[in-house]
Length: 213
Image (spheres, rainbow, N blue to C red):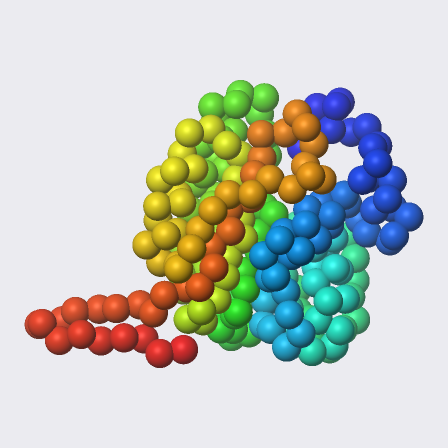
């Protein structure tokens, strides 16, 4: 993210460096996990927009060799985990081939996304891009999450969050926004947390079908 105020080290950035994490964003995930109990040993988890790797590294430590973590990003990770229960996929989640690769590692108990668009300095444009990115992450989560699974996605707040939360609530038991303390005070980012993915239902010629997973 551009802008000199975002380049300066602060308490969280210094703490992250001391503790071996590539970025301060790890403390946002820690707060989210403490609040919502997201990451548990044995889970299969997808980390979308994983670079530079702080969420990936912390999640692997939480899994402690159990379950599985798949990470995807357009860029290379800033870390190189050797964990047997980890795979990194470089590419765009809009690409059908990338989706197919990620699906092969699933279905998932949890989809995490700290992904954000490149910022332009135009807040209206940036929030529109962020909302579109969250919608894409939701498409991916709806295709790859198990029934009962959860989704966390970063959003730049700009007026569209209500519609996105309404969509989340239609597919999950609960959905709400939460801004961790580790977010910069000047930031307009928040995190949307949806818990308890509902079973998909289809009606064909008055006959109800449910996907079981």
